[in-house]
Image (cartoon, rainbow, N blue to C red; front, top):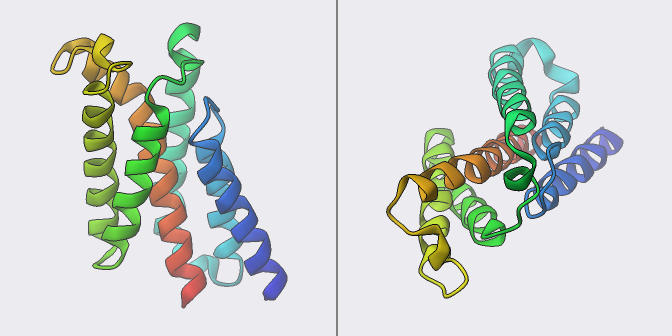
Length: 157
């Protein structure tokens, strides 16, 4: 049991850290942590595993469809991923639904905050360029943070 918890936490930590760098596999790493966290009680968590598995697959496929210039960009990633992490963990204090809402709101607010910096003014908030970039970088961060939060609730039980 302790090895399972430690292994899951290592995967979750690695996935979360990977969200702060241009890494296409951050959600997959976090999903591996979720799978390990559910190891003893797979039958109880099948809907959770399937839902986040589909979300992980979508985010991963979309990351490979993106142009290389966008996929490898670090612009504002710290703001977006950091705010998604803060929002998801704050939402986790209320409920699982608020975990998701908090992650989405955090990623959006992080993107807006970055666009207000001198380096982020090139994104031109509010514009289609800003929202496209926010979706390209924010969606993987949101999915990764939500998977990490979900796994933490499973580990905590």
